[in-house]
Length: 239
Ligand SMILES: [Ca+2]
Ligand SMILES: [Ca+2]
Image (cartoon, rainbow, N blue to C red):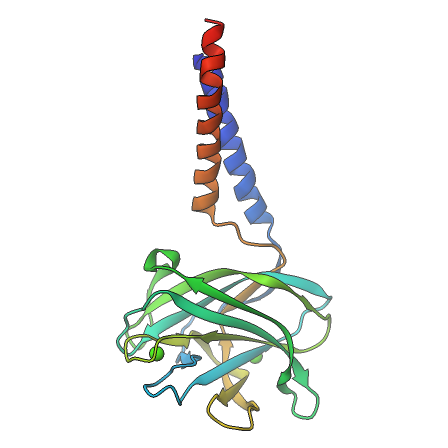
C-alpha cells in the first residue's frame, strides 16, 4: 500500500516536472524586454472619461523565418486611480505593414485575440515600481495562433478594454531608447496610425502555448489523487 501510494506521488512529481519542462522548451520567437522603464504610454480604448480619447500603440517586429505565435507576455501599469478593475480585458492584435506608410495597416489584421483576466491573482506583480510610482504588472496569455511571415516587418499591439472611469487606464511599459512605434487616436475617423518613437514596448512572443504552472501542477497532483482513490478499494481486496 505504502509503496503503491509512494509510486503514485512519484508519478505526480514526474507529470509536474514534464509540464514544467514543456514550459521551459517554449520557443521564443521574438523577445523585447527592456530592463529600464521609460515612460509608459496608454494603449487603451477607454483612456479617458467619455470614451472618446482611446489611444493605441503598436510596435514593429521582424522575425528571421516564418513562425506561428501562440502565446505572449507583456508588461504594463494601471495608472490614474491605479486600481485595476476586473475582468480586465485586452485585444492582442497583429497587423501587416501598410506599404504606403510602413506603419500598421488597420485593414490587414494578421490575427487578433481577446483575453480577459478575472482577478488580480491572474496578474503577475513584478515588484517593480516604475518612475511614475506605479506597479509594473506582467500579463501572460495564449493567442489564437497567428502565422507570422519571415523577414517581413509586422506589428503587434496590446490594446486594453478598460472601463470608462478614472480608476484603471492601461499603460504599456516601454524602454528608454525611443525606438520606432506607431500610434493612433481611436477617435479619429481616418483610423490610420502615425509614426511614433515610444518603444521598445515589453513583449515576448512564443510558438507554444503557455501552461499556467500552478494550475498544471495542481492538476497533476489532483489526477494522482483521483487515481489513488480509485485504486484504494482494489488494493484493499488484496490485503
Ligand atoms: Ca479607463
Ligand atoms: Ca519598434
